[in-house]
Amino acid sequence: MRRSKSAIARHILLKSRGEAEAIKKKLDQGQPFEQLARKHSICPSKKQGGSLGEFRQGEMVPAFDKVVFKAALKQVHGPIKTQFGFHLIEILYRDD
Image (cartoon, rainbow, N blue to C red):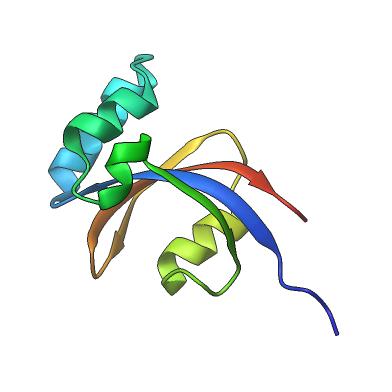
């Protein structure tokens, strides 16, 4: 049986696309991900700078999972819309 892939990612969850786009601009200008997550994210992970730790494929909602397990590592992706809001996602590690 094939083991499911795992990844380590962090995210910033925001209520609107506009907020997410504004925060992404700040990230693109070099502002620290952890600081922006702590200040702006509406997810409890904000206490850890947006870190979600390690998780397996299929444990997150489909739109989130798709980005984490297909997109480029060490880049901020988004905004990605889910039922929770708009995510900015950085994939730190993935076993491919």
